Image (cartoon, rainbow, N blue to C red; front, side, top):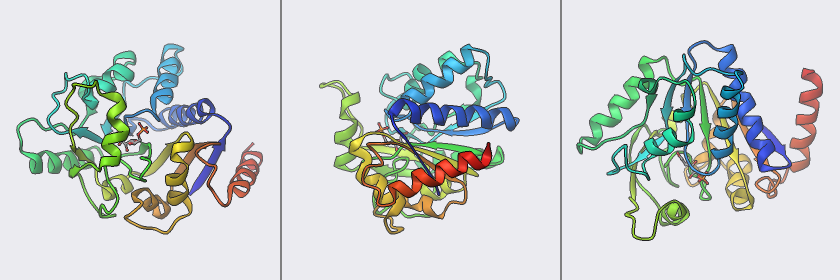
Length: 259
Ligand code: F6R
């Protein structure tokens, strides 16, 4: 696992956006896995600016989002489809037909989930998956104790996650407590993974994810078993890492060696 620690949220987000830009430039027909939430806002903003400056095109990119709330229609302003359109897709040259979100409005959850898995496979799998991390260590909506081999399915959200995401909902708005999410096994099948951890409130989850035991109690710790995972952190999110200095030093050597 490569751990990149940068001074600020902006620098960490720019690192992720530059990584994605380079990846898309080098790999024709990139299949990107995407996340929603606060951690990826600035990365999407930076990608939009790159598109506007003519540095990147999404014409040949296919995307798969990690998750979607059960019961919210795509045009609902709290749905993750709405989030993705508003924060990325509406501002770039992607064909919306190539953007996929595991939404299910007819109640046929099993079919939706297995179709989502098949669709990912039919595109040859995800080349690069972007992730955030919950303050309880979840990735996607794989809450603590999720099977490390799980596939796309319906998950009940923990009170912690509901509480943390309440900031996106108005007081009288219904906040769903279940979601469809790619499983940890699905995420682990991505050929490359880049996870963003930002802010002090993520520091404990980040320490468990990077340095804790491999455990379904911290679903993100599964990434320790991934061959190509990069964890990008701002200083605050990294502040509980025991080997903080080591990560800084090895990244410095990495950069010197590569240049
Ligand atoms: C979002 C997702 C979640 C978030 C995580 C962090 O699609 O799957 O795992 O990445 O809950 O959320 P923020 O970034 O809002 O702190």
